[in-house]
Length: 296
Image (cartoon, rainbow, N blue to C red; front, side, top):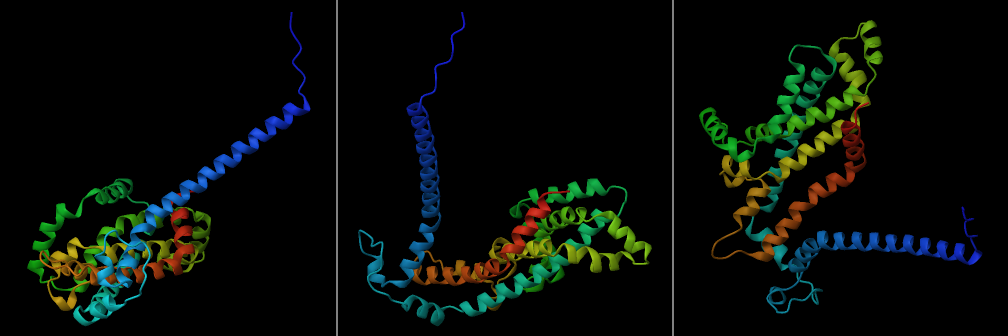
């Protein structure tokens, strides 16, 4: 014989609502604690770098270490500018990154438009091959590239180094822009062709204005990669006047005496330009990468 369900009392409903509210609050508190923990782990090295740079050397040698500086001393920055050509390093990195970014964006636009809008045999295989080139580590191909550059006389040249940096970012740039170009309705491009527009006119007057966030995203990725690239820069550039900042900072490290305060000060200065660049371009980067990652 079936029994009737027990009636839900007001007290039971209140208790159930309270338990749900407590569970929701506990999840929210746990989420915020996790965010705080991740932020603390992420930013603690940056905080320690800043603290070590702006306090006296004697305070850095004290044990146990002080978590908060009791005195401000900017002598590390003064010593850096007095003993190291940090301005020249930053200028070389800026020039190198801008050249590589320009080359990468131009070639990525042409490659992505060719893959997206033109039909030719082997197009799919070429696109996959282009993506597979991203799996090649730099250390695997640095020797043949070094020999080629030595024979062509392209060593000790920032434009020559920018070609290498642009080549490594180019595949991901082509794929980002190709997926963005694929989202543009084909009818729009066909209508322009019917009106007499050629391929380049369609590209520059219709396609590119509609995919500006993607162009910015590719430019930012290329700029960041070139700014932080070290292996090829170390191998191709030996002239002190042409060293980018990544190589210049590494040259400050010595087996016998490494000026830690100066090195950390140089690291802070080295990190400022890309941070500013990203803050300015942030909304375009997010829009471009999101649109380029989702097709249709």
